Image (cartoon, rainbow, N blue to C red):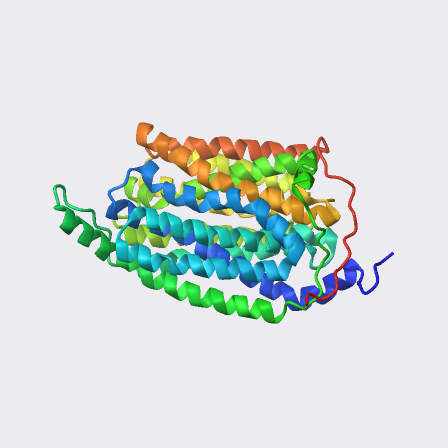
Length: 436
């Protein structure tokens, strides 16, 4: 039975997928590009402001803290204004965050950069809350795992290109630390001069994001899968679904491990002697994310034939093994290959955990998506924890923190594969009328 003026979900999926899926994929690319630039930003800010590892990881803490603060309001918002309008709002906020880098650079003040990162990530959160379930719902529900993994593959294209762009725009001029004993005026001028390298790339990104927002507004009348209005009580109810709540914990640990490793790459590669400059190390970040891109294209095909829980567990074991090798082997080439190759095994984890977690939620999918995006705050907590450990026992041994994260994720995949935990019975989602 369908409500008056609405299409069946299959109709919406076939209509929407041909028209909207390429645009949704472009969104995945855009937020991947913006997110990974923080990995390039960290060594620049660490040197400019003479930060410890823990202080430098405050960049990731503030960035991913936005997911914790914004995800639930974003889920409530998207459930009321729809996927496409939510995406437009998120893109505009992202552009505003990028524009904030200009006054932050002019002030040469570290907290201003943290504020800009928080606003940028707040916009990304809104876009993700809307775009992840939208990508999963644009087509055959049986292929949601494969479709979302394909979209995440283009997210990885963004994360591969982003470091090359950031390295050329931010690190090419070199990374300099203030000299001990500099006068206050000289120190302030030094910080403004060094921070100025960050201004232009974020201005360019802001312009692109505003153009993308205009395009999303133009197609806002396209039919999309239904999204049921949610309230705070729905989130508490949904957390009682084991597959969703344990999946949220897995998202927390996965994002934390992935971000912690990406944030440490430049300093780790220099430490083990794999490269001699921050610029060269920044370019190698593209290898880490490029392998994730390759893995997602492969995974999109593999997930058509192999149970997603089994694929998730196998990839988590592979990532844990490589992180352990990188933690205990400091020979340049072996260590570099080990830590960069983790990207290949990271590839399918986020989209697979995400689709396993929301499987069967039907019109509660927006609420489930909000909970999962809330869990992305792991990208704030785990890197900061790893930074604290690195300041005490060294950067290499600090990689044991993501090893523990991957071990849990492997367990989650096996629990789902064995049927010990499972989502609610699938509810067919109805399409809503075209958005006004």
